Image (cartoon, rainbow, N blue to C red):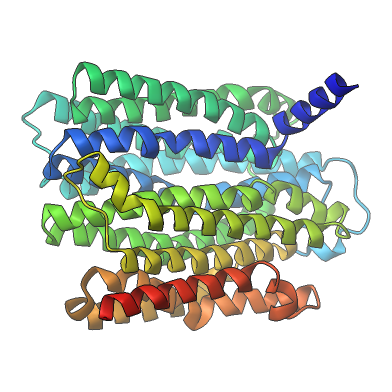
Length: 477
């Protein structure tokens, strides 16, 4: 009896998209927990700054996707749920098991679009990317030249590989993907440790990091192969222009949204890295690196369920509302705990390992943490608008919020320095984008801010504000 229960729990965890996403992200966090301290301890400020800058530059690969990944994955989910009206999901009252025609159309469109993106990414990364790293890489050194070539190759292949990733996400194979991510991330960390111990070379470490991203692309291609065979059996050689005209504008709107939000934040970080000294730059980019890990961990409870939510819009709306709120509660809880852990232990740990790079001040970290919270709140509500109504609102809302952010940075950078980046991001979101997408969801679910958020978002916001106020008072006094 006990053995059966244990086996049942194991199977549930093994096939749970949320649990496997958490495990995968925690293992990926091993780069921060195990590898990053060794880098901070074993290399000088300039080398650490270069390492963090190249990782920041590599993270821009997701912006080059132009918004197609999530949109194409969502249309795969609609097709699998039997949706026949993809312009107005409310009209899908009675559904067939799978809309094979839509499935075929989405796959054909995905193949064409991602081939075009591959060519575009090779051109831009090879030219603009190379220009941006001229102050960080000495191309006369063979190891540095090879590391940069691997950077370009891995980035372009990753963008093209989103063709397979979108299919797997759309088929709700999240648990399968995350199990493989966990295994490959573990192997990558072991290789990184070995390289550090044997060679203590930052460039070999980067080559290893890029190589394993290419392995992941190959793995996704192999995993998606059996689903592609099923689709190809009845795929017309022509692209369905009706479906394309629905996907294309939504993807571009999502890309524009990403460019105005995370793209703008990354551009500001690159700008700061190029104008500040190595000590200040490495300190801030270290905080951004940890913040990015927290974003990934806190995304898991909600984003791992998005394919399921997308199918529930068509098949089972009754249970969707409760599932959404539970996922949001877990997301906020994870975010709060991780931000507080960094707040309490970052400085002592860096001191313990004799790091040449120092962490940002505690008040700046809390401001960054608060900006992560507002961003997570807004992103989850935006996703709800996407999968419940297949509408992209963020491109308009973010235009206003990004202008506010940019104006604040321009006006106050000289006075506030690096503090203005998270402050500008937060104020920009709160000025319009955050409350606008949230309001649309409250209206959709016949709710209000307090009724919807009182048990998860409100307590976290209050606690963060109290902590920040306490820290700012300590700084002033």
